[in-house]
Amino acid sequence: MLFPTQVVAESQDFTLSQDTYANLAYPDKVNASQQVIIISNKNTTRLGYIQFEDINLPEGAIVDRGILKLYFKDVGYADVARFTIGPISANWDETTITWNNKPDVNTSQTQNNEVSITEIGWKEITITNLVNQWRDGTIDNFGLFMYPIDYLQAVAEPPFAITFMSRDSADNNAKLQIDYHFEPTPTPEPTATATPTPEPTLTLTPTESSINPTSRPTSQPTNTEPEDLNDESLELTKESTSSTDENIDETSNSRDTMIGVVIGASVVLVVGTGIFIYQKKKNNMKKEKSDEKKE
Image (cartoon, rainbow, N blue to C red; front, side, top):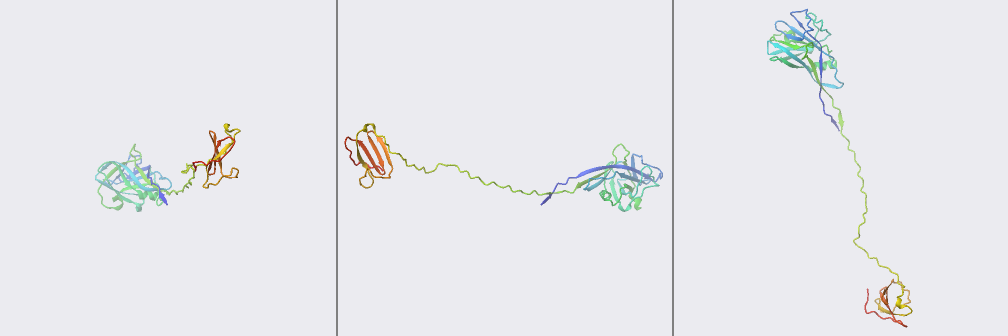
């Protein structure tokens, strides 16, 4: 999915390249050096002509609004000024324009305007359509004419007079402001990238077993003979036996584990389930049954 980026509005001002007016009362007079441009239908007719520098907007710019900005220095005879604005259709030169050689105008692309003149100051007139026609080549940019409505339409209009600052004035010169924007470039939706989840590593932690088996101790029979048994015979007394009262052959090849312990003058042997005690005796040996049975 694509998402449009935010639209950012921009603006650019264009200054006058030439301007003048023609006065019916002085048909041969050139007014190019005047610091004001006069439009009126009172006492005499005055027609204005203005041209702005070439309109060069960045490539891809889309015009939102074209605004003609005029600083009205003097006004009179009415509260409202009604005049026609349209494109000039041929080249002209401000230094030669008079009433008698006025430039040709395109009356099919005109617009009528009504501006309050109860006070002086900056006035704004929207001419977006004309600006777009200049840009797309529908009409050539030879500038604009400004006529009282009744001059072209031959209708009765209330008299008025307006004076706005020309490009020859020290300040407050007329200008053309163009607001525009660019077609937003769709921003692709970021693609979610799956991050592989590492497989858990099995860590074996040694734990103490709940069951602690007791190793059966193994011991080798003690072959050391007690010091006080030297050169003397021992009598074997059978302390305990297995479940049967069967005599145990001392010379049998029993596979039971034998454990021997020296206790004082006796030697205790544990063989299988039997316990044998050898006590120190002289010259003879006998077996005695133990009064106590060990598990």
